[in-house]
Length: 250
Image 1 (cartoon, rainbow, N blue to C red):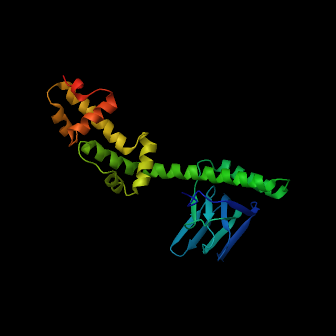
Image 2: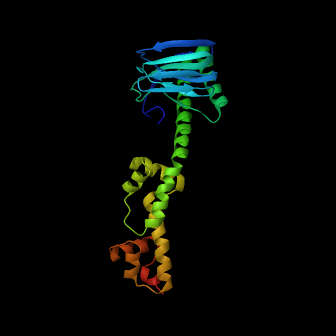
Image 3: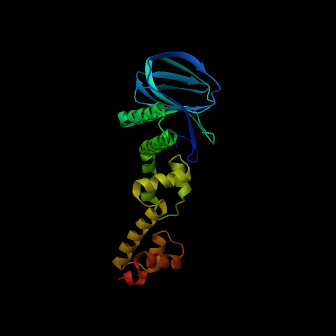
């Protein structure tokens, strides 16, 4: 997740419009979080253990208490300072949205509401900010999913080669260098079914083809499809097809 958690309430402290500014300074022990979108030029951030270049169109998150140094030529940005009822974990990070102008407009709307301070503006500001958070999270997850797609293909190739064997989902996740929960989520997003369902669909298709030949007994097909228990195999076929494997056997 871009914000590190999805269960926080926000209190907006201030909103700043783009203003030409060049910086070369340390930022220390700030109690507020910062969220910005770079409107022009770029800024370079460095901190203990890392560094990052924020370019035009990038959205950058600065969690509270993340000491860092910023250096830039003349650049402009929309900047929102806010606090949360629960800490935001992680360090400084950025995302490059597919449509920066859309997000710039949303930041601009938040600034306008903050500046005008019409009755109920606090609620409108929060609503716009939560919308911003939601859209950033969606875009972030999409970018992560795209970058992880080649690794998911590694698991798919393994499944296609070994689906008649006992395959642990944890092993597939390990092949992709990701947690089991994240692997399951990405697999479901890409293929529309869980990894286990995908494997069982392959086994089912293979079993039906073998049974249709009439050359193998139900017991043989069960073993060939990776089922060590013929009773479980029979229940599996009955559940998936509505009929017993013996009726599929020619």
